[in-house]
Length: 261
Image (cartoon, rainbow, N blue to C red; front, side):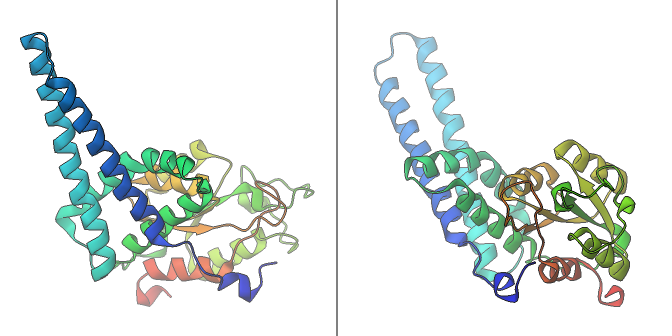
């Protein structure tokens, strides 16, 4: 059971992910300088042309990514969507994410901490937009590990198999569905999650999962806006996990129009 104090505990800092993004740009810029140095000792014209094209591509990418990072910072700072920079922001976040994770290893920063920061940045960017959706346009994706492992009524293929005994959070999830009328998909992995997205064609998604699955889900769902809600894992990963219903409901209400709440 998640306590009120757990619900209100501090979230990951957004500046961690943004800071690592900036360091990634500097690292790539260093690579470009190294290539420039190598170009100063060419042996053939073809080699010169190839190096110029390569360096030009890197510089163009760097400029695009720099504008993307600038867009992320400005959007969060102003709490306002900057529409022209949206594509560059997506490019910056997806292109540099592996670099950011690599830098985290170099600086001995916990990977889940970086991913939590990524999720916070994503949520903040989503919250700069205004939504007024109907319940059927919203999809809640939840992991199957919410079900108590000893339960004989398996819900991996159909959440309605739940007998609502209250022994795990699935009962609360169904209560949320009844309260708001939103679609709910219980996924055992990315393939089934994508199937639900294809089936319901949502305008927005509220996703409940661990750091790893949320990050991949957010990236896979682009450009559909996703608000990520981290699950709680008192017994370890993928086993009898819990959810914060207040956080889930807050995310749902953010997307729905006032008449639907």
